[in-house]
Every structure is written in C-alpha cells, then in structure tokens.
Length: 206
Picture: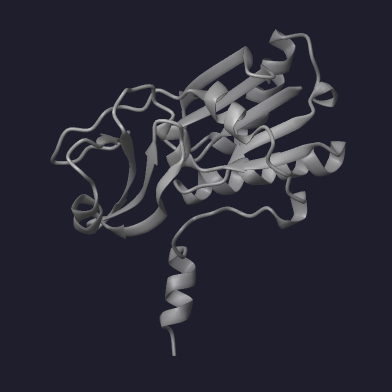
C-alpha cells in the first residue's frame, strides 16, 4: 500500500510517502505564513522524487488537529480534495498522537501544545500509542496534576519545565492505523478541540 502522509498542524510542515511502513520520501520544513503557497508544491516535489504520482497512492493520512487553526484547515482541505477527486482512502491522525510516537522507553508520554493563557492541548499515550488520557483542551495545571512521575512530557513549545522535542515515528503511526476504516472525505473535519476565536465571539454575543 502506498500512502501519503501530511501534517500541517504544528510548527513544521511534513510531507511523507510510504510503501506500507517503508519510507520512500520524507520532508520537514518550517510551517509559516506561506503554508497555502508551499503545501501543494511540496507534495508535487515529493512524488517527483519517488517517480510516482498521486494516482498511485492508496491512502492519505492527514493530521486533523489539534494545533494551528489555519494550518489544520489547509492540510485537511488539501487532503480531502485529493481523496475526493481521486477516490483515495483518508485517515485522520491526531497531532498529539504523532508527537507521542517519539521513541523513548518510558511507560507514558504526555504530548502538549501551548494554547496560550495557561491552557494546552494535551494527550497521554503509552509506548504503543494506546490512549491513556484522551486529547483535550484544558488548563495546564490540571494536566500536570494528572500525570505520574514516570511520564515524559513532549512538546515543540517552551514551558517553565523541561520537555522533550518530538521525533516523529510515522511508520509506527501507519502500522497502528493501517486497519482503520477510512473516512468519507466530506465528513472529515478539523479537530480543533476548542472553538475558534470567531465562534467564541459569536457564542458570547447577545
């Protein structure tokens, strides 16, 4: 099975092509304000490098959040368009689970994304990527009260305590989700875990 992997939810833009769990191509670059201009050319380069085309893939794995609202929206929109147009399978992946694929021996891994104002997106996974605490948007203090001393905290963001920079193990993610039922592209939506600023303003209005 040939798979395209896309992640635009974090500080980095990731484009990967895999045959089963074997890496054929992997690129990672800074996810900046030019994402809408960079993603499609990056996908094109990826397939040129492995002498394949989008028509050759069987499945798309796309990170649908949590993370950057704009980044998630762009990545999901591109993945859905490809899946719908070419009739390809599409599987959503959590950014927090992807972070937890970092290869370490500790029992549990706490993935965190700074959501500002004392809040985080957080999820706890074991070394096999089984969910210990569901992905959530909550106060940082609450998350810290829920973890045991053996858990390793993983984040690309800076906190007042030590965290480990994630090192993504995409083959592990693909292996775990290879038997997942694909989504209908039309029903796949970003998983922001919290309301957008516009939604919060709308809901707070009279």
